[in-house]
Image 1: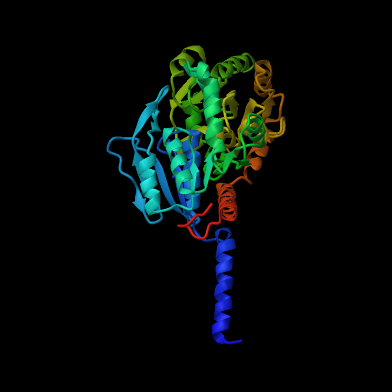
Image 2: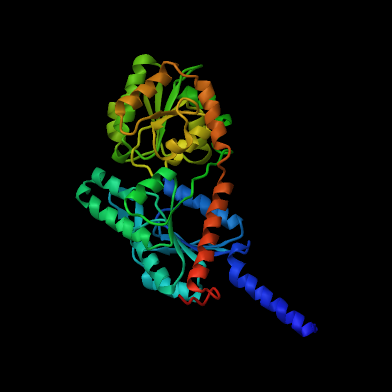
Length: 419
Protein backbone atom coordinates (compact mmCIF):
# COMPACT_ATOMS: atom_id res chain seq x y z
CA UNK A 1 0.00 0.00 0.00
CA UNK A 2 1.42 3.42 -0.95
CA UNK A 3 2.13 6.16 1.56
CA UNK A 4 -0.48 8.37 -0.15
CA UNK A 5 -3.10 5.60 0.18
CA UNK A 6 -2.29 5.13 3.88
CA UNK A 7 -2.61 8.88 4.51
CA UNK A 8 -5.93 8.94 2.68
CA UNK A 9 -7.33 6.10 4.81
CA UNK A 10 -6.03 7.77 7.96
CA UNK A 11 -7.67 11.08 7.01
CA UNK A 12 -10.96 9.30 6.33
CA UNK A 13 -10.72 7.61 9.73
CA UNK A 14 -10.09 10.97 11.44
CA UNK A 15 -13.08 12.53 9.66
CA UNK A 16 -15.21 9.56 10.74
CA UNK A 17 -14.17 10.06 14.38
CA UNK A 18 -14.87 13.82 14.27
CA UNK A 19 -18.25 13.44 12.58
CA UNK A 20 -19.46 10.61 14.81
CA UNK A 21 -17.69 10.97 18.13
CA UNK A 22 -16.19 14.46 18.20
CA UNK A 23 -18.69 15.88 20.67
CA UNK A 24 -18.40 12.92 23.00
CA UNK A 25 -14.67 13.41 23.50
CA UNK A 26 -13.24 15.88 26.00
CA UNK A 27 -13.01 18.79 23.59
CA UNK A 28 -14.13 22.16 25.01
CA UNK A 29 -17.65 23.32 24.22
CA UNK A 30 -18.95 26.78 23.33
CA UNK A 31 -21.93 27.22 25.67
CA UNK A 32 -24.42 30.11 25.72
CA UNK A 33 -26.25 30.39 29.07
CA UNK A 34 -29.28 32.64 29.39
CA UNK A 35 -30.49 33.54 32.88
CA UNK A 36 -32.50 36.36 34.42
CA UNK A 37 -30.85 35.99 37.83
CA UNK A 38 -27.20 35.75 38.83
CA UNK A 39 -24.99 36.74 41.79
CA UNK A 40 -24.72 39.08 43.59
CA UNK A 41 -28.48 38.47 43.62
CA UNK A 42 -29.21 36.03 46.45
CA UNK A 43 -31.50 33.11 45.63
CA UNK A 44 -31.22 29.42 44.89
CA UNK A 45 -31.33 29.78 41.09
CA UNK A 46 -28.61 32.44 41.03
CA UNK A 47 -26.24 30.50 43.29
CA UNK A 48 -26.82 27.21 41.46
CA UNK A 49 -26.20 28.55 37.97
CA UNK A 50 -23.12 30.43 39.22
CA UNK A 51 -21.77 27.11 40.53
CA UNK A 52 -22.40 25.46 37.18
CA UNK A 53 -20.75 28.32 35.29
CA UNK A 54 -17.68 28.12 37.55
CA UNK A 55 -17.49 24.34 37.22
CA UNK A 56 -17.89 24.34 33.44
CA UNK A 57 -15.28 27.08 33.08
CA UNK A 58 -12.82 25.14 35.24
CA UNK A 59 -13.41 22.12 33.01
CA UNK A 60 -12.13 24.13 30.04
CA UNK A 61 -15.37 25.16 28.34
CA UNK A 62 -16.05 28.61 26.86
CA UNK A 63 -19.06 30.37 28.37
CA UNK A 64 -21.16 33.24 27.08
CA UNK A 65 -23.47 34.40 29.89
CA UNK A 66 -26.44 36.51 28.83
CA UNK A 67 -28.39 38.20 31.62
CA UNK A 68 -30.12 41.47 32.58
CA UNK A 69 -27.97 44.34 33.81
CA UNK A 70 -28.41 44.51 37.60
CA UNK A 71 -27.23 48.09 38.10
CA UNK A 72 -27.19 51.10 35.78
CA UNK A 73 -23.41 51.38 35.54
CA UNK A 74 -22.61 47.64 35.66
CA UNK A 75 -20.06 46.51 33.10
CA UNK A 76 -19.89 43.09 31.48
CA UNK A 77 -17.07 40.74 32.44
CA UNK A 78 -14.79 39.78 29.56
CA UNK A 79 -11.92 37.32 29.89
CA UNK A 80 -10.48 34.30 28.17
CA UNK A 81 -13.27 31.75 27.54
CA UNK A 82 -15.83 33.85 29.46
CA UNK A 83 -17.96 36.63 28.04
CA UNK A 84 -20.96 38.41 29.53
CA UNK A 85 -23.65 40.11 27.47
CA UNK A 86 -25.78 42.42 29.63
CA UNK A 87 -29.29 43.34 28.44
CA UNK A 88 -32.12 45.55 29.67
CA UNK A 89 -34.56 44.33 32.31
CA UNK A 90 -37.51 45.36 34.46
CA UNK A 91 -38.13 44.64 38.18
CA UNK A 92 -40.27 41.56 38.85
CA UNK A 93 -43.53 42.38 40.71
CA UNK A 94 -43.11 41.26 44.32
CA UNK A 95 -39.37 40.70 43.74
CA UNK A 96 -38.17 44.25 43.11
CA UNK A 97 -34.54 43.23 43.71
CA UNK A 98 -34.73 40.87 40.71
CA UNK A 99 -35.19 41.80 37.07
CA UNK A 100 -36.91 40.12 34.18
CA UNK A 101 -34.98 40.36 30.93
CA UNK A 102 -36.58 42.01 27.93
CA UNK A 103 -36.75 40.21 24.54
CA UNK A 104 -33.48 40.25 22.58
CA UNK A 105 -34.16 37.94 19.63
CA UNK A 106 -32.52 40.10 16.94
CA UNK A 107 -29.43 40.76 19.03
CA UNK A 108 -29.06 37.04 19.75
CA UNK A 109 -29.54 36.11 16.08
CA UNK A 110 -26.77 38.54 15.09
CA UNK A 111 -24.48 37.43 17.93
CA UNK A 112 -24.91 33.72 17.29
CA UNK A 113 -24.64 34.10 13.53
CA UNK A 114 -21.18 35.62 14.05
CA UNK A 115 -20.10 33.31 16.86
CA UNK A 116 -22.20 30.17 16.91
CA UNK A 117 -22.39 28.31 20.25
CA UNK A 118 -22.47 24.51 20.33
CA UNK A 119 -25.60 24.69 22.49
CA UNK A 120 -27.89 27.10 24.32
CA UNK A 121 -28.81 26.53 27.98
CA UNK A 122 -31.97 28.35 29.11
CA UNK A 123 -32.11 28.83 32.89
CA UNK A 124 -35.24 31.00 33.14
CA UNK A 125 -38.47 31.25 31.17
CA UNK A 126 -38.99 35.03 31.00
CA UNK A 127 -39.08 37.18 27.85
CA UNK A 128 -35.30 36.98 27.51
CA UNK A 129 -35.39 33.20 27.75
CA UNK A 130 -38.27 33.01 25.26
CA UNK A 131 -36.44 35.18 22.70
CA UNK A 132 -33.30 33.05 23.15
CA UNK A 133 -35.35 29.92 22.52
CA UNK A 134 -36.74 31.44 19.30
CA UNK A 135 -33.31 32.55 18.10
CA UNK A 136 -31.72 29.17 18.80
CA UNK A 137 -34.53 27.33 17.03
CA UNK A 138 -34.24 29.58 13.99
CA UNK A 139 -30.49 28.95 13.77
CA UNK A 140 -30.80 25.22 14.46
CA UNK A 141 -28.75 25.35 17.65
CA UNK A 142 -29.48 22.56 20.20
CA UNK A 143 -31.29 23.87 23.29
CA UNK A 144 -31.68 22.55 26.83
CA UNK A 145 -33.65 24.21 29.61
CA UNK A 146 -34.00 24.18 33.40
CA UNK A 147 -37.21 23.96 35.41
CA UNK A 148 -36.10 25.79 38.56
CA UNK A 149 -39.05 27.84 39.85
CA UNK A 150 -42.72 26.98 40.37
CA UNK A 151 -44.02 30.26 38.97
CA UNK A 152 -47.54 28.82 38.71
CA UNK A 153 -47.49 28.04 42.45
CA UNK A 154 -46.13 31.50 43.26
CA UNK A 155 -48.97 33.22 41.40
CA UNK A 156 -51.51 32.63 44.18
CA UNK A 157 -49.25 34.38 46.72
CA UNK A 158 -49.03 37.60 44.72
CA UNK A 159 -52.63 38.14 43.65
CA UNK A 160 -52.32 36.43 40.28
CA UNK A 161 -54.03 33.11 41.02
CA UNK A 162 -56.33 33.69 38.03
CA UNK A 163 -53.21 33.38 35.82
CA UNK A 164 -52.14 30.00 37.22
CA UNK A 165 -53.56 27.91 34.36
CA UNK A 166 -52.09 30.23 31.71
CA UNK A 167 -48.68 30.17 33.39
CA UNK A 168 -48.74 26.36 33.49
CA UNK A 169 -49.58 26.22 29.75
CA UNK A 170 -46.82 28.67 28.89
CA UNK A 171 -44.22 26.81 30.98
CA UNK A 172 -45.15 23.50 29.36
CA UNK A 173 -45.03 25.01 25.85
CA UNK A 174 -41.69 26.70 26.58
CA UNK A 175 -39.93 23.61 27.92
CA UNK A 176 -41.39 21.20 25.38
CA UNK A 177 -39.75 23.23 22.61
CA UNK A 178 -36.28 22.53 24.06
CA UNK A 179 -34.38 19.32 23.32
CA UNK A 180 -34.65 18.36 26.97
CA UNK A 181 -35.48 19.97 30.32
CA UNK A 182 -33.46 19.44 33.49
CA UNK A 183 -35.21 18.99 36.84
CA UNK A 184 -33.57 18.55 40.25
CA UNK A 185 -35.44 15.47 41.57
CA UNK A 186 -37.15 12.30 40.38
CA UNK A 187 -40.36 13.39 42.11
CA UNK A 188 -40.35 16.66 40.14
CA UNK A 189 -39.77 14.73 36.93
CA UNK A 190 -42.80 12.55 37.68
CA UNK A 191 -44.93 15.57 38.62
CA UNK A 192 -44.09 17.46 35.43
CA UNK A 193 -44.45 14.35 33.27
CA UNK A 194 -48.02 13.98 34.54
CA UNK A 195 -48.64 17.59 33.49
CA UNK A 196 -47.52 16.92 29.91
CA UNK A 197 -43.88 18.00 30.07
CA UNK A 198 -41.62 15.98 27.76
CA UNK A 199 -37.96 14.88 27.63
CA UNK A 200 -37.18 15.45 31.32
CA UNK A 201 -33.78 14.63 32.81
CA UNK A 202 -32.79 14.68 36.48
CA UNK A 203 -29.71 16.78 37.22
CA UNK A 204 -29.36 17.15 40.98
CA UNK A 205 -27.84 20.07 42.84
CA UNK A 206 -24.48 19.93 44.51
CA UNK A 207 -23.22 21.20 47.85
CA UNK A 208 -19.95 22.81 48.95
CA UNK A 209 -19.13 20.66 51.98
CA UNK A 210 -15.97 22.66 52.67
CA UNK A 211 -17.93 25.88 53.07
CA UNK A 212 -20.97 24.38 54.79
CA UNK A 213 -19.30 22.46 57.57
CA UNK A 214 -19.96 21.81 61.27
CA UNK A 215 -16.44 23.06 62.03
CA UNK A 216 -17.67 26.61 61.31
CA UNK A 217 -19.64 26.60 64.58
CA UNK A 218 -18.96 29.89 66.40
CA UNK A 219 -19.52 30.21 70.15
CA UNK A 220 -19.12 34.00 69.99
CA UNK A 221 -22.03 34.16 67.56
CA UNK A 222 -24.14 31.90 69.77
CA UNK A 223 -23.43 34.14 72.77
CA UNK A 224 -24.61 37.13 70.73
CA UNK A 225 -27.84 35.24 70.24
CA UNK A 226 -28.10 34.79 74.02
CA UNK A 227 -27.38 31.06 73.97
CA UNK A 228 -25.26 29.21 76.51
CA UNK A 229 -24.04 25.62 76.70
CA UNK A 230 -26.61 23.18 75.35
CA UNK A 231 -29.23 25.85 74.48
CA UNK A 232 -30.48 25.23 70.96
CA UNK A 233 -30.84 27.59 68.01
CA UNK A 234 -33.59 26.97 65.45
CA UNK A 235 -32.73 28.34 62.01
CA UNK A 236 -34.51 29.42 58.84
CA UNK A 237 -32.61 30.57 55.74
CA UNK A 238 -34.37 31.99 52.71
CA UNK A 239 -36.63 34.69 51.40
CA UNK A 240 -39.11 36.02 53.98
CA UNK A 241 -42.14 35.79 51.72
CA UNK A 242 -45.59 34.22 51.75
CA UNK A 243 -44.77 31.48 49.24
CA UNK A 244 -42.34 30.01 51.79
CA UNK A 245 -45.24 29.06 54.14
CA UNK A 246 -43.48 30.76 57.04
CA UNK A 247 -46.51 30.96 59.32
CA UNK A 248 -46.22 27.20 59.81
CA UNK A 249 -42.60 27.62 60.91
CA UNK A 250 -43.77 30.26 63.40
CA UNK A 251 -46.48 27.92 64.71
CA UNK A 252 -43.99 25.05 64.98
CA UNK A 253 -41.49 27.20 66.85
CA UNK A 254 -44.15 28.40 69.30
CA UNK A 255 -45.04 24.75 69.97
CA UNK A 256 -41.36 24.00 70.54
CA UNK A 257 -41.09 26.89 73.03
CA UNK A 258 -43.74 25.24 75.18
CA UNK A 259 -41.31 22.35 75.62
CA UNK A 260 -38.04 24.32 75.76
CA UNK A 261 -38.44 28.06 76.52
CA UNK A 262 -34.68 28.63 76.03
CA UNK A 263 -34.88 28.09 72.26
CA UNK A 264 -33.97 30.94 69.91
CA UNK A 265 -35.30 31.31 66.36
CA UNK A 266 -32.79 32.75 63.89
CA UNK A 267 -34.16 34.17 60.63
CA UNK A 268 -31.57 34.63 57.87
CA UNK A 269 -32.87 36.43 54.80
CA UNK A 270 -35.17 39.31 53.97
CA UNK A 271 -38.43 39.96 52.20
CA UNK A 272 -41.93 41.44 52.46
CA UNK A 273 -42.98 39.24 55.41
CA UNK A 274 -40.19 40.36 57.73
CA UNK A 275 -42.28 42.97 59.56
CA UNK A 276 -45.13 40.53 60.24
CA UNK A 277 -42.72 37.86 61.43
CA UNK A 278 -41.01 40.27 63.84
CA UNK A 279 -44.40 40.91 65.43
CA UNK A 280 -45.62 37.32 65.53
CA UNK A 281 -42.59 35.18 66.39
CA UNK A 282 -41.16 35.42 69.94
CA UNK A 283 -37.54 34.71 70.90
CA UNK A 284 -36.45 35.62 67.39
CA UNK A 285 -33.36 37.21 65.89
CA UNK A 286 -33.52 38.65 62.37
CA UNK A 287 -30.08 38.60 60.80
CA UNK A 288 -30.91 39.82 57.29
CA UNK A 289 -29.04 38.53 54.26
CA UNK A 290 -25.89 36.51 54.92
CA UNK A 291 -23.49 35.04 52.38
CA UNK A 292 -20.24 33.08 52.18
CA UNK A 293 -18.37 32.39 55.42
CA UNK A 294 -20.87 34.39 57.46
CA UNK A 295 -23.77 32.28 56.20
CA UNK A 296 -21.77 29.12 56.89
CA UNK A 297 -21.26 30.27 60.49
CA UNK A 298 -24.98 30.92 60.95
CA UNK A 299 -25.76 27.40 59.77
CA UNK A 300 -23.10 25.65 61.83
CA UNK A 301 -23.87 27.65 64.97
CA UNK A 302 -27.49 26.48 64.89
CA UNK A 303 -28.92 23.09 65.82
CA UNK A 304 -32.29 22.63 64.11
CA UNK A 305 -33.48 23.77 60.67
CA UNK A 306 -37.19 24.37 60.07
CA UNK A 307 -38.21 24.39 56.41
CA UNK A 308 -41.97 24.41 55.90
CA UNK A 309 -41.96 25.65 52.29
CA UNK A 310 -44.26 23.89 49.82
CA UNK A 311 -43.21 25.84 46.70
CA UNK A 312 -39.68 24.57 46.06
CA UNK A 313 -38.43 22.76 42.97
CA UNK A 314 -35.46 21.68 45.09
CA UNK A 315 -34.49 23.81 48.08
CA UNK A 316 -30.72 24.32 48.19
CA UNK A 317 -30.93 25.33 51.85
CA UNK A 318 -31.88 21.76 52.79
CA UNK A 319 -28.50 20.44 51.64
CA UNK A 320 -26.68 23.43 53.12
CA UNK A 321 -28.25 22.75 56.53
CA UNK A 322 -27.51 19.02 56.35
CA UNK A 323 -23.90 19.63 55.34
CA UNK A 324 -23.61 21.96 58.34
CA UNK A 325 -24.78 19.19 60.67
CA UNK A 326 -28.28 20.44 61.46
CA UNK A 327 -31.36 18.33 62.14
CA UNK A 328 -33.70 19.35 59.30
CA UNK A 329 -37.48 19.27 59.76
CA UNK A 330 -39.17 19.51 56.35
CA UNK A 331 -42.05 18.27 54.27
CA UNK A 332 -41.53 15.01 52.38
CA UNK A 333 -40.80 16.45 48.96
CA UNK A 334 -38.12 18.20 46.86
CA UNK A 335 -34.57 17.94 48.27
CA UNK A 336 -35.79 16.67 51.64
CA UNK A 337 -37.57 13.73 50.02
CA UNK A 338 -34.51 12.91 47.95
CA UNK A 339 -31.89 13.09 50.71
CA UNK A 340 -33.58 12.59 54.09
CA UNK A 341 -34.44 9.25 55.63
CA UNK A 342 -36.94 10.05 58.34
CA UNK A 343 -35.48 9.64 61.82
CA UNK A 344 -32.02 8.76 60.53
CA UNK A 345 -30.54 11.93 59.03
CA UNK A 346 -33.47 14.31 59.41
CA UNK A 347 -37.20 14.49 60.04
CA UNK A 348 -39.95 14.42 57.42
CA UNK A 349 -43.63 15.30 57.64
CA UNK A 350 -46.36 14.26 55.24
CA UNK A 351 -46.82 16.89 52.55
CA UNK A 352 -49.24 19.68 53.59
CA UNK A 353 -49.86 18.03 56.98
CA UNK A 354 -49.22 20.98 59.30
CA UNK A 355 -49.94 18.95 62.46
CA UNK A 356 -47.32 16.36 61.47
CA UNK A 357 -44.76 19.11 60.76
CA UNK A 358 -45.37 20.64 64.20
CA UNK A 359 -45.18 17.21 65.87
CA UNK A 360 -41.81 16.50 64.25
CA UNK A 361 -40.54 19.90 65.39
CA UNK A 362 -41.67 19.20 68.95
CA UNK A 363 -39.91 15.83 68.95
CA UNK A 364 -36.62 17.67 68.40
CA UNK A 365 -37.37 20.15 71.16
CA UNK A 366 -38.10 17.45 73.75
CA UNK A 367 -34.98 15.45 72.79
CA UNK A 368 -37.05 12.38 71.92
CA UNK A 369 -34.62 11.74 69.05
CA UNK A 370 -30.85 11.31 68.97
CA UNK A 371 -29.96 14.77 67.74
CA UNK A 372 -26.22 14.09 67.63
CA UNK A 373 -26.74 10.96 65.51
CA UNK A 374 -29.02 12.83 63.06
CA UNK A 375 -26.47 15.65 62.83
CA UNK A 376 -23.65 13.25 61.97
CA UNK A 377 -25.72 11.29 59.45
CA UNK A 378 -26.94 14.47 57.78
CA UNK A 379 -23.37 15.57 57.25
CA UNK A 380 -22.30 12.16 55.92
CA UNK A 381 -25.22 12.14 53.44
CA UNK A 382 -23.97 15.29 51.71
CA UNK A 383 -20.34 14.24 51.29
CA UNK A 384 -21.03 12.34 48.06
CA UNK A 385 -22.79 15.24 46.33
CA UNK A 386 -19.99 17.60 45.40
CA UNK A 387 -20.44 20.28 42.75
CA UNK A 388 -17.66 18.62 40.77
CA UNK A 389 -19.73 15.45 40.32
CA UNK A 390 -22.91 17.35 39.54
CA UNK A 391 -21.13 19.54 36.97
CA UNK A 392 -19.71 16.40 35.34
CA UNK A 393 -23.28 15.08 35.06
CA UNK A 394 -24.39 18.35 33.45
CA UNK A 395 -21.54 18.15 30.95
CA UNK A 396 -22.46 14.54 30.14
CA UNK A 397 -25.99 15.71 29.33
CA UNK A 398 -24.62 18.47 27.11
CA UNK A 399 -22.52 15.99 25.14
CA UNK A 400 -25.39 13.55 24.88
CA UNK A 401 -27.55 16.36 23.47
CA UNK A 402 -24.93 17.26 20.87
CA UNK A 403 -24.39 13.63 19.91
CA UNK A 404 -28.11 13.05 19.34
CA UNK A 405 -28.55 16.40 17.59
CA UNK A 406 -25.78 15.40 15.19
CA UNK A 407 -27.39 12.06 14.45
CA UNK A 408 -30.89 13.55 14.12
CA UNK A 409 -29.98 16.63 12.12
CA UNK A 410 -26.89 15.61 10.19
CA UNK A 411 -24.52 18.09 11.77
CA UNK A 412 -21.41 18.23 9.64
CA UNK A 413 -19.66 21.04 11.47
CA UNK A 414 -20.38 23.70 14.04
CA UNK A 415 -21.30 26.15 11.29
CA UNK A 416 -23.43 23.91 9.07
CA UNK A 417 -26.60 22.15 10.15
CA UNK A 418 -28.90 20.36 7.73
CA UNK A 419 -32.02 19.06 9.45
